[in-house]
Amino acid sequence: MYQGAMILEGGAIRGVFTAGALDFLLDQKFMIEKVIGVSAGASNGLNFVAGQKGRMLECTVREGDDEEKLIDLKKAIRTGSLFDMDLIYDRDPRENHPFDFGAFFASPMELEITVTNCLTGEAEYLTEREDEERLMLLARASSSIPLAAPKTVVDGVPYLDGGMADSIPLLHSMREGNRKNVLILTRERGYRKKVSKKSAALYQAAFRKYPEMAKCSSLRPLNYNRTLDLVEKWEDEGKVFVIRPQVPTISRTESDTEAIKAFHRHGYEEMERRYDEMLKFLEE
Image 1 (cartoon, rainbow, N blue to C red):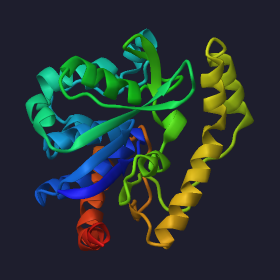
Image 2 (cartoon, one colour):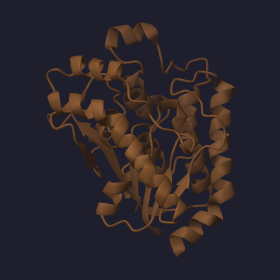
Image 3 (cartoon, one colour):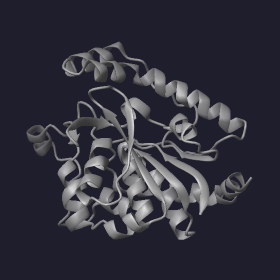
Image 4 (cartoon, one colour):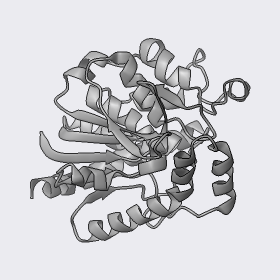
């Protein structure tokens, strides 16, 4: 098992790129001490640590006649959630696409799930090694997109998408003492978030009862872009290793099955192409 951390960015459906990359690593029986996942990256981390190759793609594409939809507008209006969170984090892991809790809890790898505390507006990096229900709650919280999903309460605290406070937890990983960091990102190099006054005003209105969350949401584009500046600088200096798409990315709500499969395949092939290079980085 390699020392260091693997950091998995979110991106909703774009997360199939990460799933493809991790599926290649599972084929190689690759393991690393720490996995840090954000939003869809946390879900990918669950499957990777549990050793369940292909599960993320199966849960995303959903080709069977009896499969439920990830996005159901009628349900969304009723539940206030764009994605069917009960399906993803309750029915799927226990019925439709069983999650191997035993393998996850027995793995020597540790998964940190990044969430945003609505009371403080700060990121927290939580783990769970025994309680199946709490594990799925943490994953659900990490993927609870503001304005597109209700808050998820864990241990009495309301949480939302980890990407709001820390989309790419590289600095956190370094503070934890991880000298070697591999990042799997779901956007092309050079991408930066646009600063929108309209979006900031929307968050201010939505989180008027949670002022720190409102502030966190408004600052997200600036913080995300600063992190990417550091990532690209340190990548060029050989201090971090980055896997990212080399083709146009799909939408976070992509519904085209073939496009989703192709993006997953691209993730697999990109990790395969750079695998030896990544091992050399970790071994130096």
